[in-house]
Image (cartoon, rainbow, N blue to C red; front, side, top):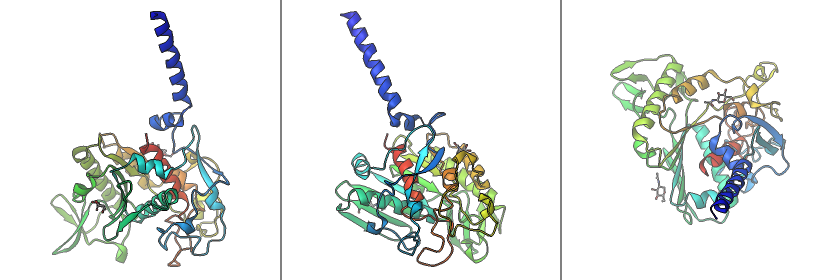
Length: 354
Ligand SMILES: *[C@@H]1O[C@H](CO)[C@@H](O)[C@H](O)[C@H]1NC(C)=O
Ligand SMILES: *[C@@H]1O[C@H](CO)[C@@H](O)[C@H](O)[C@H]1NC(C)=O
């Protein structure tokens, strides 16, 4: 009896180990060494894209490439293949069921909006008939799936830290994060910022920078970015209950304005690019801001996730709207929807579902 029990226990242990080793979820959970979801390559897969963008009611003119005249379609057919495990297919129904009663928020600049729109399209394609309420406005757009009581929210902020209008003008406050009070009530937070840090002239949305009691007219922008991220890291450490709220900091979303990045003449930009750069994400150089971001992220002492999409996206010189958008400017910054952000969301999905 005792021996049989032991044997039985041993067999079930072997079986469960086999299941654990075969299950992609295990790889995702550990996300270490042999199975890093962010390392891999892009493969053509005729079952892609994950949805037909013409049926998605949530795509703004900036990202709706097919509607605005993009005729090549191969860019829709690339699937991200991690080197050592498989990425599960995004399943909107499973997400809504598992996140019943919960709230997910994308916080940041227009790249966050870009990702939120892809997330909405992925959900819409799974539950096209679902009843939703959408409340738009600045800085929040909030879509609630009534039958599941799930809210998917985008919070627009250029710098994460505050910009306040004072007597002297607009002040960028590198050590203040007032909206954090709302953010920390969410169940999943996905942060992203960079695009606005290097802007100057009329595109710069502040007049002064404040650090503690010191006010300056300007400073090294990379240093300002670093200080703001450290403020953010301290906020996570002191304010966020990471047993309830999952925290992601997104890596820099790469741009493709300079062909030299992919060994073409420097004047080349993303226009007319129809295929990704070949090879693996590990061959990609990273933007300098990514190193600053990664080192600031190391100051987070609580469990949080570096959403490290920089290198895998750097391969996708074909993924941008270029001139196929509703404002006809050249855009090698944002991404077509459907497109690369669907992969970001598939990785996010994999990371929050277990
Ligand atoms: C989003 O909308 C839902 C449903 O109307 C509401 O209950 C929730 O408080 C809203 N969340 C935010 C952050 O605005
Ligand atoms: C993020 O990905 C890049 C490129 O693959 C890698 O060099 C870097 O170490 C990764 N960062 C972290 C914190 O895993």
